[in-house]
Length: 222
Image (cartoon, rainbow, N blue to C red):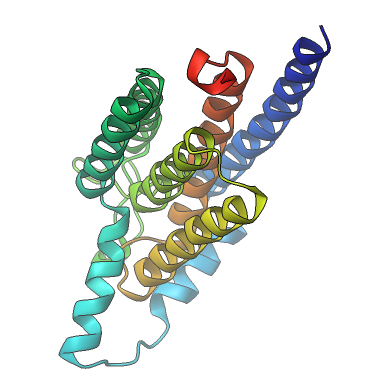
């Protein structure tokens, strides 16, 4: 009974956090749709002068940017989930990975198609343009949700202690932050694109983890 009440309390807290993050996504979306103050900041950042790095640094920056690519992140997450699922004889890790990818691509894909925002590389900020898929940033949402889910699976199923949990969380932060900074530098996305992606990716990550913890599998109970 005590464990059930604890799980309920955790679920309520997680739902509040998920709702708060989703509200952040809605607020950023409102700014994008209404050309609010955040969009003026977008323009200032996009127009800022970039330092010209050499070929090797630009190569490294592209590789960092790729850490937010859907194909790469999805492949790493699915393969890792398969390994953990086989190791612990449970389909739960793979199910969580698939649920994460499906929900992320559904929400982000629908938002991209509905808003149709152009990328800063075009030097123009327009909405409802055919083929334009800038907002919200798939790089930011992929980096946070996918690497975050991978860190959670490692922590949850290998019974790591609190220190390892903090290391894993810090690694997700570093990767996600790096992807966002490089995306701004390379004009892959507007700042508001990245904020929107972070908010929606964070909301889904918190929600999926809460569902997993509320309905533990036998391998987790052991």
